[in-house]
Image (cartoon, rainbow, N blue to C red; front, side, top):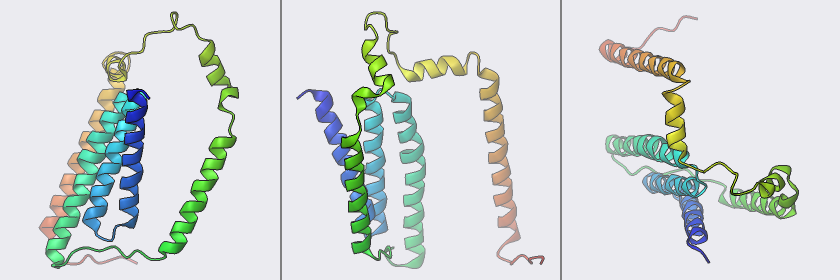
Length: 187
């Protein structure tokens, strides 16, 4: 068994086991840590599939931003409430039955599919390996495109995101200055 296959099975097992922890954990912090490991496993699978840009974005955006923000929110809420946050998991039996049924259905679909007959796979087998373009880093190619023909669009997107960030900061500051007084709803 080669190293690629071993790494694939390790990342797959990490992803599945951590996802099980997310679903079955009653402690929200444990579920958040399970989500963190799940997203790391998915990033590893992206890296193995030669999608290095997606792997980096997965780690930076989801792991580095969203999950950490979620965990800080849980921990700050726990401190305010004075008790450990717990999930209200109900109907575990029904959920387990539905999940098992979906798993069996997916396995049946995967094993009944005839992947060798798909046109793009057959076409990929016929490509001469020596005449095929060299496979390089997707990050490098995306970087060349973003500072080349798509530079104007990239800068416009950066400007729009900057304006949105400034607007959100302004609205947050304005609502903080107004204090806790309730707004009157117009009906």
